[in-house]
Amino acid sequence: MTKGTSSFGKRHTKTHTVCRRCGNRAFHRQHKTCGSCGYPSAKIRSYEWGLKAKRRKTTGTGRMAHLRDVHRRFKNGFRSRTAAVKKVKPAAEA
Image (cartoon, rainbow, N blue to C red):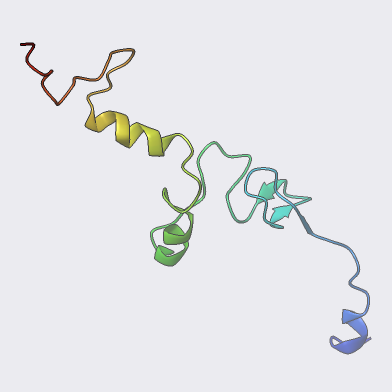
């Protein structure tokens, strides 16, 4: 048996499947861990030596469905259920 072509023909099983957290095909079926995000670990997998990888996955690269609103509310001091202060003075009644 050779190490090359004939051995490669026997490879027909999948080692990785789709990860339920990140959606990449990086979840190792036997190890039960994702090579991309580190699922089921509570913390997202990221390393200091992978600066480009961190840049791709960091906050602001996705939808930011909630965080977008937080920034806007922060500028207004997190006010809630209050009427906005009118900037134009009412016309003087004569």
